Amino acid sequence: MKRLFIVVLCALLLAAACAKKEPPKDVLFRVGDKYVTVKEFKIRGEFTPHPSYPRINRNLEKILLNNLILEKLFVEERGKNSELAKREGFKNLIKGIGEQKMREQLFYKKAFNPVKLDSVELKKRYALSQREYDLEFYSLYSDSLAKSVQKKLQDNPAHKIETFNSFWKDDKRPTWHVKWKDPDHINIHEALYSGPLKPDSVIGPVPIGRHQWIVMKVVNWQDNIILGGEEQLQHYHEVVEKVKMNKAIRAWDAYKHEVMKGKEIQFDRDTFLKLADLTYKLETANDKQEKNDVMRRFWQDEDSTLTVADLPTEEAFLKRPFFIIDGVTWTVGDFRNAVASHPLVYQKNAASRDEFYDQFKVAVAELVRDTYLTKQAYKMGLDKDEQVMRTKEIWHDALIASFERDKVVGELAQAFPDTTDPWRQRNLEKAFDAYLQDLVKKHNAEIKVNVDEFDNLELSGIQVFVKQEHVPYPVATPSWPIFTTNNKVDFQPMQKKMKIGK
Image (cartoon, rainbow, N blue to C red; front, top):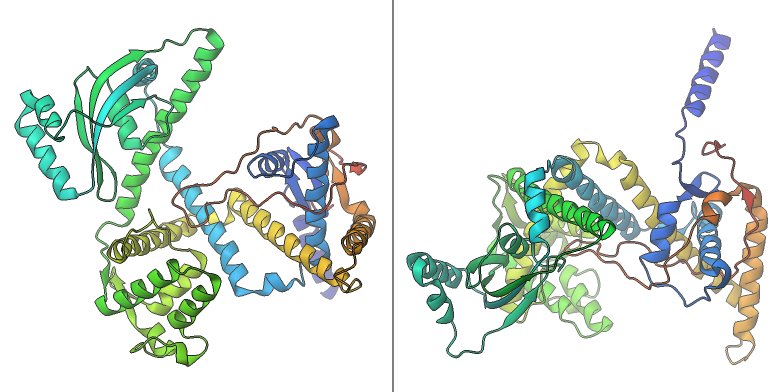
């Protein structure tokens, strides 16, 4: 019986090993069980600024390859026992980055992928995409004013121009030249490019943000016809992409509305004012010391003499109700836990305390909305999505490796205590280079490079820093890894059908 159990166990282990997932076809290199794909290599190399290394003989590609390999080696060597990995703040950061990616994948599954495009509409949009407009416009910063303007325009359809012109006391009006490719608000783009507009057409008021509207008048337009088959084809693909994305954004707004249907936040007024006031002080602090003082007041986790007058003790404060939604009470502690992995996102900088209160309320509401969207993503199993898991691993490894690199440098620096020594920095660099060489030598057998893929790689020389808007974690990719300037590539070639872990 015992022998049968061992045989079955071995069979199960063998089956599990054979079932190990094949790495993606575009794996560029592996370090043990870890790998980096060609796409990830390009993103790390092109979506964040890098040192100005010479571009001769693919120098940039070689240096990045070596640095990414060293990044993985630091994780392999020191990651399991890293102090950073044990910190709650780091765990919350990786959790938040992963959940943000889950919501992004939810967008694609619920809104982008289901979009169906109509060939007739695409033909019309393609023709309109070659049009450029000269506009006059008027910005509105009040919902009640926007409604008033809308009513005036609707009540006098035959005199829209006169009504529009009456918004100014003189003839000097703001002007605007608009092209199809401009990154304008989706509502502006759709208002101008959904159908042909004649000169003197008045459009709006169009909502473009919280309490923000715009009214536009077409002064003139011109068509810039695109000639040449290849250029036309490229532009057509751009039109298709933008039309699909705009439809997806509309569908996403509808999905979010459906998820939040019937859910209204009811704030506890006193708690809201205390949190908003203390957060305002934190956001407007002038320096780190002032921020620390505000944080001590905010959470009362240090010197009690810094406690704001009439603020309860920490434990009592964290238990206070902050708001109720869908029959569920969120305490200050619940809110604090949510913010730990989902920093508040403000739509704009507040000009006053009262305006900040409004922005704070919106930021809290968006955090709550994202919480419900994240729950939907978990229900769909998107925490196991390949892109979500890769995103978390990329950030985890990059941050752990840079933390451990700095720790190693600090440990090596103890051998050179004389900070006045002019050769100290040079000696420290030599010691660190020696550490890197030993690290590569120790793990050399684990490093495999897809030479064919690497030989075909070429990074753009343009320095770009990619950020996303209105998300808790706006930076698109970890910073360029900096461990070495070595441009020598002499690692073992990767076998094409080698499984991860083999």
